[in-house]
Length: 178
Image (tube, rainbow, N blue to C red; front, side):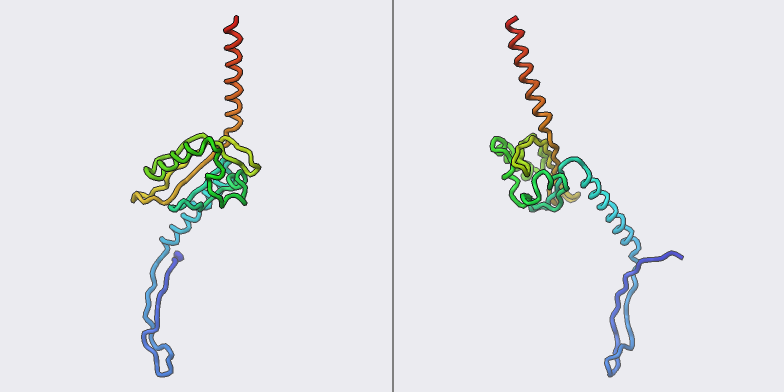
């Protein structure tokens, strides 16, 4: 008594003079395993989207032509939905563009991980420090299928580091006099 998924294919083999079907030939194939695999894949995709949509980081994926195929809400919120179709380079701080471009070219050429701290303009036009990691997505066959990127806003940490450095410099100046 188990239910099975089947795929049926058939066609009329013989017709009478009035074109009515007399005999049909066809097959029934058990596709239960395929349907089970499809259900597992759907559940896995739903779990990924749920996690990606609730994470407090920016996350995006591209295809092999580097066109975005997935962008989580945090990324859309940061950049602004209306700006997302623009080139990513439009958002990078002028002082960071050459390092970003160099690392990005290396990533695409050598399929190596990109990691760096760069300033990116948010939807309000304010530059924020982002710890960014981008990795190539490669199939077991070695075929490049796109990129996966994550970004974390580290502006507060960078501001704290700057204040600490200023304080340390000031302390050293005072203690050198004493």
